[in-house]
Length: 200
Image (cartoon, rainbow, N blue to C red; front, side, top):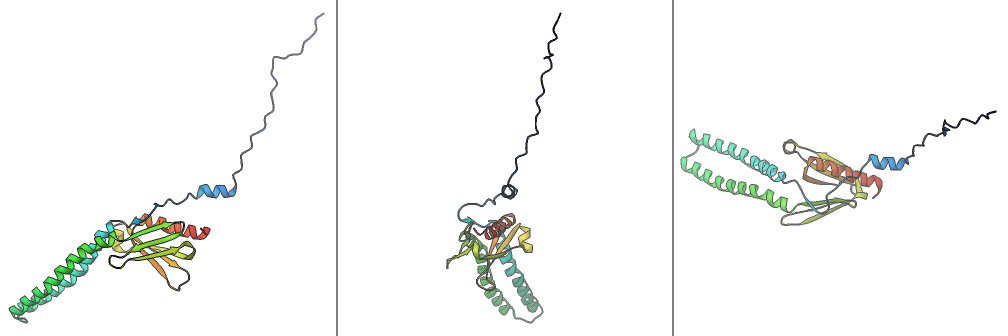
């Protein structure tokens, strides 16, 4: 007589429960979706292309009226409206100051660039400018109402922009910083508005 033994060849299958997905707090999700804006540390110069921009604008503003003036004088002399001696004196008397002013317009943007520095951090915006008379401007983030980034035709040509910060406390008060690279101006604008909304 044989006794039947229970079949133990088939292993018992353990019941497994699906793993729970860890929940991420809403604040943590927002933090990952909005990475911090990286800003350079310390005082920064504006974009060096602003030197070329200011040179072209200054020289064209001088040369176009000067060319029109000399054209009028030359035509007047050619048609007998001016004696030759008077024409020569006028050309010499006007030419020397125009040349001197042109040289000043060529070198001044370099001096302006060397003496313009800015800093944007969690405290706000600080600007140091001035070649002869130095001036320091500080705008705390608590006083920032809104900001603008603008580009004129010449600024678009060189990918530059102007950051304008409108402040509270004084009606119509605003601080402008020209000569920034366009992407840098947008990044600074976003940082100032974010810092203001978070009350940093």
